[in-house]
Each structure stands twice: as structure tokens, then as C-alpha cells.
Length: 386
Image (cartoon, rainbow, N blue to C red; front, top):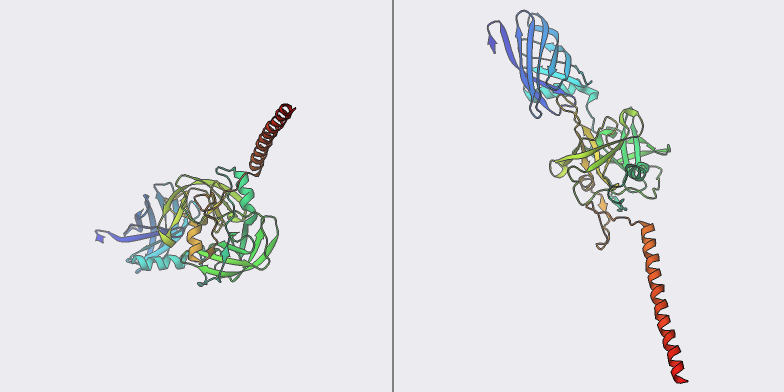
């Protein structure tokens, strides 16, 4: 829109991985200055800024800044510009990629964003249907187990995955050789390196992969038998507000444990996701999200990082991942005491032993009473017979 000595055009802004598109306007003036304003379409955040540019004919270039209502700031430069169309990029104060385009349709602007973002965005390999996989259920811990008990249960099956220069997390799901993780963790690779928490390592081949649900399956070349693997949640949804723990390898720092709660459940079917405020970072992807009974309820998949968005992470529910990858789960006896996730609750052996001891004491007391009565009867009868 041309008004006096200024020109106003529609503006589109993408931040982070492009989870939200921010919409607004850019207004340029003849003196080489300009103003921008934009706001989120999914999240409540408003931004304003300014820029300076130069023109040679119909071409232009320049730099600018932006400041948003959540405290985020950004610096950017024009990569290409005319009076009616242009784009540019930069970085915000949280280190996230910042991209803008004006005069373009949203679909075209997103293509430009993805091209400019390049390696910063996750890569997905070709779809791969896995062979038949059958897994067994295992015992859960008692409710409200301590963090240490949960870590001791889950950590041995949590692994670090290295796919070229990229790294992420995964966990053994069958107790020996099948690892589940995110598809974007393995990327385009067919073979990856695996490191366990006890510092042993092996390699594995990708046997299943889907970008639709962002899940991949890896079979290790050297199986590792786990004596007491953590159970997975298959049969129920997590409760909003329940405590959870994420185990991962963020930013290559080694195994890290973070705690939070289930903030919500989003979507349906294969699009269902667990929302959590548990702190996660690059490298946590593919790791287990665990409840207070040591049951793996989800596979950490991403953290939304963009202007106006903080402390929001998501995990794919294990049941949706298992079903989508056509993994078969062996059932357990219906007369067992099970959790909401469908796993048998492991009894306290010491308690059971005391119960049996207690029962044994009662039995012997009753037996001694009965024998005493019989003996008394025999004595009385023998006296009467005299």
C-alpha cells in the first residue's frame, strides 16, 4: 500500500524451526528508514522493529532490529529486496534462526525459509517399514518411586546415538537389541553408532523409519541383554499434572536427568503428543519420558523454540509409536494387578516373605493348639479307661 512517501507491504516472519508463522507489515520510507510490526498466529506475542536500507534502482539492501513482548530481540539483514518483494535473515537473542519475507504468499515464504534455514532444520530419511518385532511387558516400580529408583531402572537401556555429526538419544525397547528413537535423530543415515550408559558401545542399522510420526527403529549388531528393563506405557494415557523425568544427552553434555510434569495432551491418533514443561534441548530427542512408576510413557521429540514460546516440549506417546511401527506386544494374564499403562506391579519380595512367615507362624500355632487338644483328649480318655 503506497501512502504519501511510504510503502507498506505484508510481512511474514519465521523463528526457530518455523512452528509458528508471524504476520504483520513492513513500511519503508523514501529516506531509507522503515518500520515493522508482526504478531504470532498460534502464540500471543507482538513485535515491533525498524530497519535502514539503501536502494539502487529497484534493488535494496539493509539491516534492522526487532523487539518482542516476551523480551526477545533480533538482528537481521536483507538478503534480497525490491520495492515489492524481499527477504532476509538473522538470529534472535536466544540464538534461534530468524527469517522474514515480504510481498510473498505464505507457502512461497515457507519454502524460502526452509532453504535459508538449511542444516538448522531436522532432516528425514526415506520411509522404511520394519520387520516383525514382538516385545514383552516388564514389571513396573511401585507408585511414587524415588528419582534414584527410576533412574536405576531406566538408565541402563538409555543410549546415545551418533549419526554422522549429529547425536541424539534412544532406548532399548525389547530388552536386548531393538532401539527406538526419533527419525530426525538418524536423519538420512542407514547405520549409526550406539553408546550405553556403562560406556560400552556398538553399531546398529536402521530397520524402521517414518517422518510421519518421527520415529525410527535401530537393530544393534551386538545385542545387550538387560536383566530388568523398564516397562513402556501401552494401554493408557498419562494424567495431566503427573510428575515425569526426561533422560537424554543434551548438547553433547553426557547423560542428563530433568524433571517436570505432563502439561497437556495434544492432537489425536498418530498426531497425539504429550506436552511437558520438562527442560529438553538438542540431544534429548529420542530419549525416554518416564512417569513415577518407572514406565516409559513417551519418546521426547522436540522443544518448541521460537519467539514467544518457552518451556514447551513434546513427546510421542509410546503406544502411538508402537502401533504405528506395527510392533506386537505380548499380553499378560488378566488376573494380575496392573498399572494404568497395562504393566504388572512388582511385589515387594521382603513383604511377601514376611507374609509367608507370618502365615507360617499362624499355621504352626494352630497346629500346636490342635495337637494340644488331641493330647489332652488322649490323656483324659486314658484316665477314664483305668
